Length: 229
Image: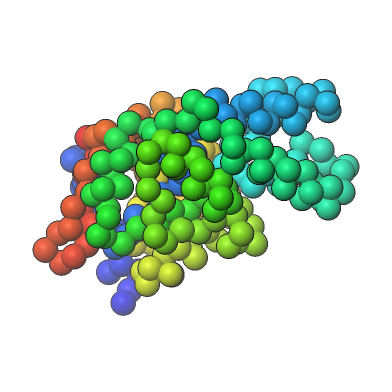
């Protein structure tokens, strides 16, 4: 099968297209965890005197130890990894204020019997905690921090998820909100839907403010038919 045969079929006029599978980020895409993330990361950053806005900007979409390495470049990675273990334990219980992104439950319900996967820089425990707090079910197939050697913007997570679903990464749609997530989806060759008010600035294929206008169904050939409102 050629790349042209596997490429998503799109219509710019209606923002509708078909793909073989959907790959979904979690934080900022399916769940709004910004309040919890802010509390945990700012507690961690305070002793180092780091700029709060810079910390939150760097932390979004990355694995914790990689965020720490960027913020504290002279610190040994072993210390970052140990610190991240403690931070993850704190994040798993810090669920106050976590809610679904509007339309997330309906999108997941529409995908229930269709090929899809969760691709997140969070641990599985954290994914379960945050999805549960938002009243959402974690997809059966998920690629988490423990499953990859490099986090976003590396495309490894999306490529691995597509291959586990038995599809070409270029024949998938990625739902993402962060700059590094959008970069990762594009690097995988996917059609990328940027989710959130600022997502368009990251250069996705299409952008939506939330998931309420997104509809998904199986077409006559069993492919996912996606329409963006």
